[in-house]
Length: 492
Image (cartoon, helix red, strand yellow):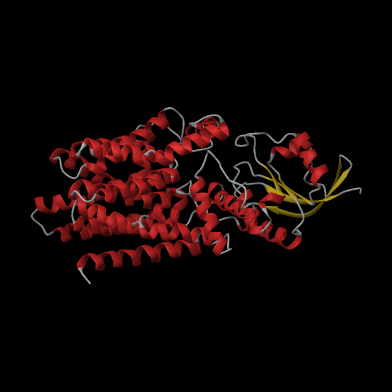
């Protein structure tokens, strides 16, 4: 076994150990992550219905549905899919960095990636980010392989195919299409045009579907900005118009030393006009994210910084290597103290994840699990329920998935901030009178309490000719209110 294979095998073992530890010791992130699993279950329950949601990755939802088809464990199966891609990214990223830099930089960059705290935690969460990063860097590997080694045209086509997949997993990747096409221009105008056209195939189809279903071809880009702007106005998220905000996010989650050395490495690469291709992608994405911050279209969500962190890693290692040559030392003598320093920073980040990564929910409150267990034991397969959200819209998907209740048998009442069509009193009453749900799962801070003027301290409530009998209650810590479960008793 040659040196490269040994290095990759070692890195894969390290990456696997860390991510498997995460999946067994931390919960899937409440909110968006679990919502993807809920959507995947709905797809399986309605195989003849084409699921399309212009605001998220349909390809990712169908990927989760595929793994759930073979392994019907909604708590672990979807997360293992992400863990697999979180591990396998080592392979394309190693060969990409080796090709653009050298093998030493490739090994140490991937060692940091294998231990990257935010990447390891996100590998255990069911969002499309980790899968997207695998396909994106796989596409880049074949792209630069064609560009640097004048490989067969099939290599460029394969790069475009992989990029199309990445483009349907995370929409911001579309920004790279013109830049990558321009980078190919010197190799031949026909190659530049070919890559541009091939890379636009699935994005163009997506724009058509958005227009067909919503009337707005660019709905995917406009819809996410509206709730983000509302959250910013309500000061419910970490937000500032600091142009260096993403640098601070990177420093908090990747380590200050790595980020500073990485920026120095980028400056060095441009000065020497060598190995600067990934830096162009970094600067383009950094500018795009910063622009959206300045326009109040998004906030500093840590997981959006992961790809910036991966792109900056080789430049951090490059700068250390250059330092070693300048000091006339063997590179390993400089690399080892840096790795030890990085590991100490990683240990600090990982031991206090709520401080350094406040938007990553590490564990689900046990009280939410208790509520789901109660519903699993008491709700019959044919029963319907009305389930209301907490003020942050976090726990509804977790309760549905853990209770094993079919999503199609649940009326979910979110807060008005994120619900496109508000749940009016008339709409809810129509659902209750026609569908006759058996239980109402009511959160103390859900606007439904005020809508119906419900006193949650009462054990029995008489309203609208119905009796709501309190059968279970559970308080949620950290000032997250409480949930009451009422059995709805009908007169006939």
